[in-house]
Image 1: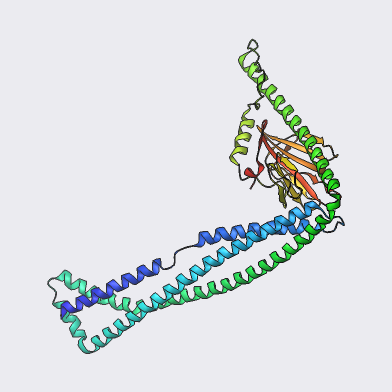
Image 2 (image 1 turned 45 degrees about the vertical axis):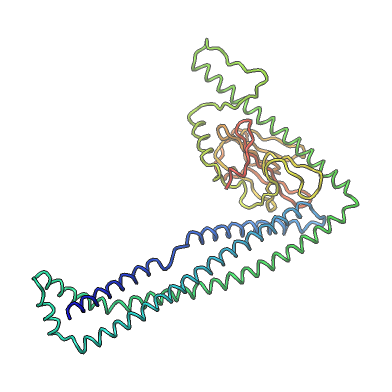
Length: 428
């Protein structure tokens, strides 16, 4: 009799432990993956908002602009990324819903088993167990320790049985509530996906209209190509000015470093000699402040703020074909960023204004030195800093020029001495 009771108690305890374990592992956490997708979605939406702001301005011009077509293509690509992002989130939510529903079914089954066992226990206690039975079970112990353990068991077991079903029922209600929340979110995501698909189709149609306008210019293809080549020539002249300014800054800093080195070694020290045919390498003036600034700039690679609050990259770093006109190659030592009208350009890091000069089209350009690194900002209609002034991160440098097509675009470059860098690898 007593042996049978012990077996039943042990069986029920094992069941309770198993259920608790299942409750712990039933809902695997996917919050990190969801958070990552949501952050990506927010980033894409910000880019689309920036494109919308730019397109709102360029549409006001009567002339069809190749820049407008280019940014429309970028918007279509961003829309597709957003749709893909939403689809991934929907798939993840579907998986969470299935897992939650499965957990609810399993827990409900366990609750059903526990209820049956609990009912059997009540019926057994009603017919076979009285207060005297409990006392006999306790007094039949082999020693005082066993008697005390049986007493404690009866006291705790009653509370455990009372709380078991209510706790699991509460957990079941929680899982059911979560399922309802996920189902609602799934519906919202499906609605959002439909809206994005519709926007993408409308945008594709708009791009086709713009492409037809370009096709109408086929009779003036030579004239259009000539205009682009003229723009490329102006771009090359500007880049030559930038290269010369950077070379002059490198030479100046190298001279300062050589002077300091001579002063440190003494007046009779030999003057450093340049090796014929060897490209001059950058040597910063090795003050503690310069070293600290250079190291700080380098350590922020990939985390520098954008040189504008709102903008879209329209041309990447390196040599690549023109996006709309065949047979024309673009050589870009930085990245082109298109912005809304009258946008302020800002420094991406602490530094000192090294050069301010006018380009071939009359617009102003700024070079800022950050130790051994330099950043370049072109096509400004006005500047708010002067040569030699110290600037801080995100400080306004000037206003970007807007051309006759209502396009506000500038070129941003990063250099380490005479070595050009890919700006996309440096900014966020």
